[in-house]
Figure 1 (cartoon, rainbow, N blue to C red):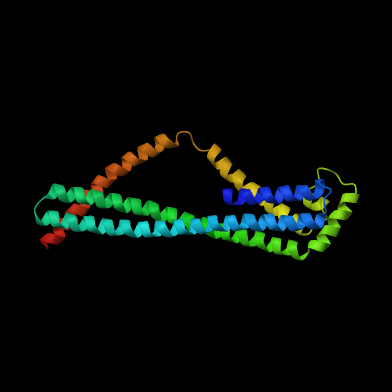
Figure 2 (tube, one colour):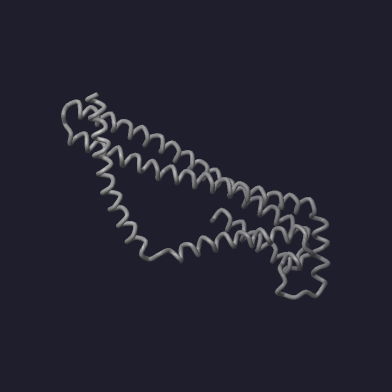
Amino acid sequence: MAIFSRLNRVIKSNLNALIDQAEDPDKLIGQTVTDMKSALGRARKELIEAMGSAKRLDKKEKELGAEAAEWERKAVLALEQDDEELAREALRRKARALKEAQSVRARAADQATAADAMKAQLERIEEKLDDLKARQKTLAAQVRRARTEPTAPDRPAGERLGGGAFSDLERMADHIDRLDSEVEAHELLEDPRRAELDAKFRALESEQGESGIDDELAALKAKLGG
């Protein structure tokens, strides 16, 4: 979430500056746009890296698929030489390659989904920034007026500044906060027995895997014999 947390800090610090400082609000709004454009530029670089990671994982999945096919070819070769144990080992390695390919495929899908979500969020933030820049004079007048009016200190910054683009940016910051909280809660609520359960399931999968290899070996022998 670092890609969004940085933007969040920029949004909140600039909204607070517009309330608390006595500087020219027109200049502060211009600085807000500049700061966030810079943060967006860095965020887009991270997005490109995430997209590149998804493509590398796609490539890795294809390589593992080719590796699995090669191990099957070697298993056939071993059977042709009447070396059943060597064929069995080749099929074990084929199974490992296929299992890793499945894991890589899931990671690639997760990366692609995350990249799409990041792209959509960044586009929304960029739209709000364009609106902020287009309404700079009007919003600066709102800030000047808001500074002279008594307001409750616990009201949201966007409301104290007159709403509009400020409220939109503040809602975006709150949304990013929720995303960060969801990730943190997931990590804190992780089942402490998960490692033990994972080990047991791996043992079961290993036993089932040997049975599957026996079946595949028998099928290859039948194919060669037929």
